[in-house]
Amino acid sequence: MSTLLQNLHSKNFRLFLIEARHSWSWQVEEFEFGKRHDLPKVIQKYYDYQFQALRRFNRNLPENERITVRCLDVNHVAEAFNQSLQRMPVNISGDTVFTKILGLAGTEKKYRDELDKILQILHKNTALYEAK
Image 1 (cartoon, rainbow, N blue to C red):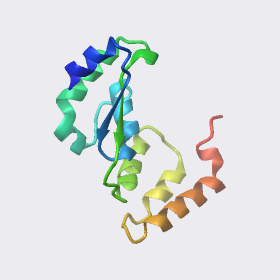
Image 2 (image 1 turned 180 degrees about the vertical axis):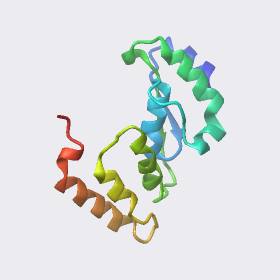
Image 3 (image 1 turned 30 degrees about the vertical axis):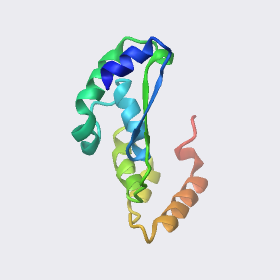
Image 4 (image 1 turned 90 degrees about the horizontal axis):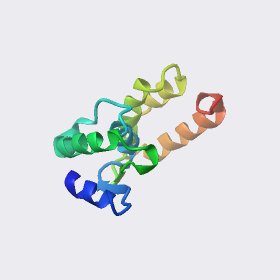
């Protein structure tokens, strides 16, 4: 895969989609661009070699020429967002909104209620995510 992507790069190919939890896209992108040193274990299990090679390829490219990997979740799992949020404090410290969100249950039955709670928290606390 990484060799194919590198060959397609010369033809202005810059985006690669994989079937994986879409809430992991930010982690994969940060890894590919050298801003994160690890990936979710399930991604490592299936794509570690390829993503390591792509990361090395992207390392010396200008940001607008790097190949970006995005996750596209065909079979969405409700717990994916909580699992993604659990990794966010590594990069975003001091934001109490993430502590509140992590306390929410991650079940299919309560999924829509959870999203509503997250939305309410974000609406009430815009200073937690707006750029200063």
